[in-house]
Image (cartoon, rainbow, N blue to C red):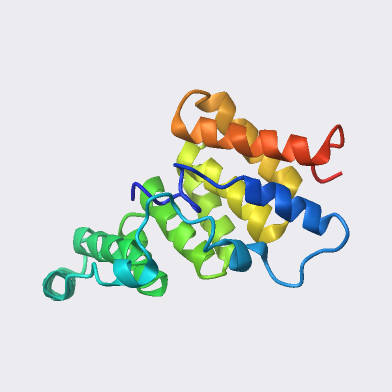
Length: 202
């Protein structure tokens, strides 16, 4: 799995954005998914700019991997590597193309499945992201990175704070001291602070 394949990044997740978004939507539901407006400012900490990251694509390596993929249609490895290269360059549509092919060849790989789901989310396809996360959790119901992403997409992509809360509570129960558990705890603390005694989603 990509080290940064958590929507908004595990390290330094800007969960203050959640509080601002909640306050902004207490009165009215936004016309567009929050993900489209929050994505840029909630990018992984210490990540390069989009233009810089786009330059990270090694075209010679890409060409070699594409040749390998064409030569070996049943081999997921070059397809995963291509997906990873395009993910790192924030070319999520290209990453989707290769991850989808890889998932067909390795349908039981929850990490790969979740990487694909994150790409769907970054291309404003939250329903497809959630479906992919559901598939990942059928493979491994305790996959904390998937559960963390599930909460993020439910909160930002679907405005489902109750669903996000449930997902993040699962992460904390499974991995309270790990990076995903700590990120989920910050998210829930922010929701609680924004809502006071009122239960999120109520």
